[in-house]
Amino acid sequence: MKLKWLALFILLGTQDVLAQINSRYLLLFKDKADNVFSLEKAEEFLSPKALARRYRQNIPISESDLPVSPSYLARVAATGAKVISTTRWFNGALVEANESQLKAIKMLPFFSSIEGNHPVLFGTEPGEVRMAVKAQATESPVTLDYGLARTQTTLLGADYFHQKGILGQEIVIAAFDEGFSRADQLEYFKLLFDEKRVLETYDFIAGEVNVYDKQSHGTNVLSTIAAYQPGMIVGIAPKAKFVLYRTESNMMESPYEEVAWLLAAERADSIGVDIITSSLGYSTFIGPFNNADYNYTYEDMDGHTTIVSRAARWASRKGIVVVNSAGNEASSPWKYIIAPADVDSVLSVGATNRNLEYASFSSIGPNALGQQKPDVSAVGLGVYIGTNVGTGTVVSSQGTSFSCPQVAGLVALAWQAYPFLTAQQVISVLKKSGNQADRPDNYLGYGVPNLRKLEQIVATEYGPLAVEPQPPMAIRVAPNPVMDPLTLLVPTVLKNQPAQISIIKGNGQEIYRTSGLLEPTVYLAIPDLSPGIYILKVQTKSQQQVIRIVKP
Picture 1 (cartoon, rainbow, N blue to C red):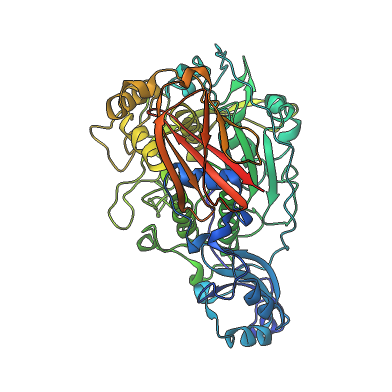
Picture 2: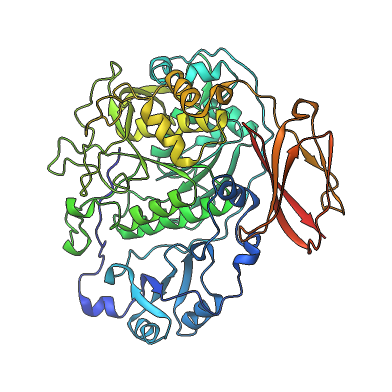
């Protein structure tokens, strides 16, 4: 894994000169008052998929989901400072300001503080994010020739789920990295792009949509999940959907990259991403531009201190499974895991060789609070990855950068198979399926997870019906926008099954609930259903469906 160090990249070395130029700061505000947005209309700032992820896991819509107050941003801009971006979770704004503008901002009544009490690296303004066309799902049971990736795939039991036709369909994975060089031109990603399963791209460093003309580390990482070239390389979840975000630069090392990670995570949350895979980490900076103010210590690896760890914690709270590399620091003076692998709710991943033995470079735990880390491990020594050479070649490499995304792909398969699990429940059953779950340690955590064993664990903890192949719940609302009474069309396979039906407002408030046996047609007479967007949730014994409905 490419280790990311922290430091202010000072191009001009005197305080006098710095005082005359604009710098970037992450401002934090006291509250979200005087806001045009409301929790009652969460659909205005969270996508239906983001809302569905919360409702499926019983995560309430809260003030942390509200956008920053536009009136506050207007008053910041009135000082002459430039508002670059905003952060809902931190309740703040990334701004570009000179010394006099910053002084005026500090006088505003809603100003709280500056993150870290220092600037972040001066960079390029992020631009508008554009969406790609969404793909149609394709799925069928398959027997695959994994090529050189066979060992690393079968050790995880991914082939077992692939044979069931579970290849990550409809699961959305966000990959955060330093670039995805030529990914759109490589043969092993042809199916990914032909099926238009890259839903969105954005470069949070350069402020542009193109992520394919940057570094190749992200391409290597993505290949372990999304590649599909039988006989050469097949990834762990080759039919998943992806968003590709560049949050790192090999030209700079500063907290700006952590801020970019935060902004990317908030964007991923708002569009409904299920999983974040991040082969990135932060600790200290050593080099000619070292500034002690930007260094972290091991004591900061507590899951609560660094910008990126706080961002990852927020993402986890929103029902996203965050998977992060543990780091490659075991042989360095640092030795320990790096942020955000230090967060208790983040699934941090160490590395083994192909004999499931500890790889000597893999960062060790615990975190600074004594919590065991890493959580699980996968092959990271002698791991096969795709490159950006020619039309795409496969080489042997090493690093927790490449064990991490394999586990992210495994999460996608598990969640596709068991959508009733919450994010933290998915993490729990994965850990329990590890090859050293009975003796976890701070080198490999619970060991290497395996989907064959995970299936047994789910059956034990949630009942045998949980692992039986279930016909799809194809309940439809017709028409939609809805009329009175609201009409549900139920497939034959669900007839006479007991179900609970709820209608939920955008703020998470349940306004209607009923239960009973499903009939081929279900009519719901809901008094005083005012115009707006709602979520209809249908829960049976083993399945759950969430449908967005509109009342005109």
